[in-house]
Image 1 (cartoon, rainbow, N blue to C red):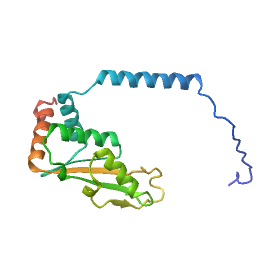
Image 2: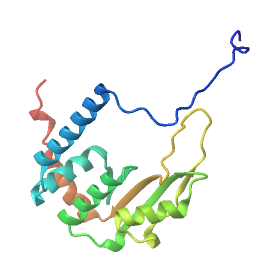
Image 3: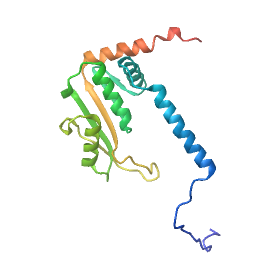
Length: 177
């Protein structure tokens, strides 16, 4: 190309620039809105948790006969799912399972220890991980601890959960149009 002979000079500053007025205003607004959100939500009651967890599961959970599960790479979402499952339903902890989706080259032991702490599920209850082979040009970011898939196998619990989902999401006959 015609630019190949142009020398590029990269200058490095000794200290990072301080945020400008717009950046400071944006940061202050974000912090204020985060605080407002925390104040609006407050502490979740048992009913709040039931509704929030049901909505989370209805939208993002996987539903197979006799199986309740959830997959995400955000530990807060996985922790909320498990808090809901453990608090709102009588479960047998020994039936919980975790499997990880982790790119090759990332540390499986570190990822398992991380997700075991997040989920409070012993590593002995983890299943064989899926080790993804990175494809050139497809994805450049990798989640260092992977994506956790948590599931619980119990037909009665799954039916109870489908009951609260049905209560939260009534039939489509109520939807206009």
